Structure formats: structure tokens, C-alpha cells
Amino acid sequence: MMMRPKLLQNFLDATFVVADRFVTDHHSKLSVSRIWAALQTHSEISEGAGTGLPVCSQLGDATKPSLFQDPELCRLIDAFVALEPALSWRVPDGSRLHASTNFEHSHANTVIVGPSGIERRDDLLIGVSLLASNVRYPDHSHPPEETYLVLSDGSFRQKNGAWFTPGIGGTFYNSPGIVHAMRSGDSPLLAVWLLWAG
Image 1 (cartoon, rainbow, N blue to C red):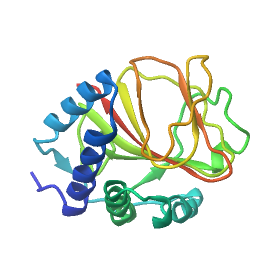
Image 2 (image 1 turned 30 degrees about the vertical axis):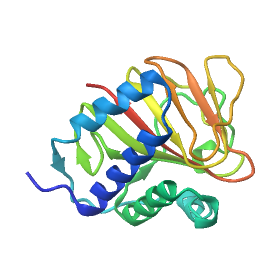
Image 3 (image 1 turned 90 degrees about the horizontal axis):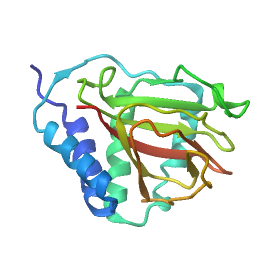
């Protein structure tokens, strides 16, 4: 088994420092602690090259250092920017229910740890979503519970509830199977998600 690459380890370390500080929801705390415990055992590492999509041109605007005043968030953004060339971005399959008409070419996800990630495993997923400005992600759901670490302005919704804006450094929890969505405003939306499927 290959050792975990340093850039990946740096990103994971920075992610969990931020999660430890900013996550307040009890369910999220439990989920994040399970994920961190599982990550103490490395899994198969993929050596494939990263692949970008046109929307990735928005990453520069979403990761500008001037947006992040908190040192731990700065460290997470720096670790992500260093890792990003190795990431494979894709537009997800599935429902387009309530998606904006520009969704197809203005959004991308990347799995960093998970079945198609740099580190291949089935018990958890860690990834990032990027939406260009003024994009609405479709309503969707999935069996694993999920914690979001929000790294930009943008709005989120659960079930048929009101849209809410966690802000940079905000976090929230999606229970298993809950319908949820997100949308960007006049700037790109960037968010890290952590799913526990163990």
C-alpha cells in the first residue's frame, strides 16, 4: 500500500482542524469524529493525473486569500490550492430537479477521498463542490450523513425549508436521506463535504 501523499495529508489535516473548531452540531461532531478515526488507516492511493473542467477557471475567485481572515481557514485554502492540480473534477449524474439552466457547464464536484478519489475507500467520502456565480444545484439526497464546511458565500436548503447562508467558515449537517440543495449568488460557491458511509 502506498503512503498517503503529503499534499493530501496536509489537506486532510487542515480540514479536520477547521471542522474541530467550527462544527457545533452534535450529529456533525459525531460524524466528523468517525471519519477522522477511519482516516487513521490509509487505503489505496490512485496515481492518476487530475482533470479540470471549464468551471474550474472560477477557482481563483473562490480561493482569493483576501476572502479568508481566519488563519485556520487560510491554511485549509492553501492546502486545497496545492492539492487541486491532482484532483479530477466532474459534473455529477442524476436528477436535475430545480437546477438552474446553466448548471451543466457551471458546476463541478471532485472526490478527494472516496471510491473515485485520490485515496480510494468505501467507508467515507470527502470532496469539494464548486458553483460558478448564479447557479442553483438540483435537489438531491443520499443515504450517508453529510457535514458541509462552507468556504464562500452562498445559500443552502434542506427539505422545503427556507434558504440559509452559513457564510465563510459556516458548517451544517445533512441527515441521511434528507433532500438538500445549494445555490451561488454573484460570486462562486466553494464548499467541502464529508460523508460517513461506514
